[in-house]
Length: 237
Image (tube, rainbow, N blue to C red; front, side, top):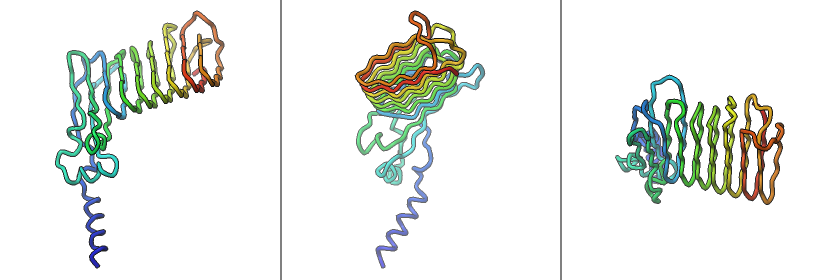
């Protein structure tokens, strides 16, 4: 009779665990921001560039995984020490923690921000899931495993990693765009609204390139892709 009672208690604790809710690690006014840096083990990144505010950035954490669930139940701190967000001059700096086992690695961190247009973004993480919407000055990503999407515009894009999935959809073409992708395995889809042609160079041990746009050297957008195993699709908007 004791075992069913224990199971009932465990399920009741699971239902009441405070760690199921998000924990706010910080929220900032980012109206003056011109650049964003994100570093650490991993996180979800959701950035929107807008002509109008309010401009706010928030880093939130929630327990993720088996130990994260139990540690949030026992510890009042939960995910509050897993990362940090701060302003240094006009730069927004986000640190997603040290990834220590039985610690920050059991927290899922989410950065959401509405930013002014033409902000430069740099992401250096072991793993990242990043979604950017709007017009950015640049996007620089270095990640072992990355899932990156851009819907809008960025003059310069550089993405490096071991396993990369990239979805870049340009809403306009200014004919000054440069895109560099590099890594072991890359799956990329690039779309350019209004473009009649692009300039691309693809180098890989095994590559599949499907382009609906003509390749014209010397023009922009200029696309350079280097890796081992590549699947690339290029098209109009």
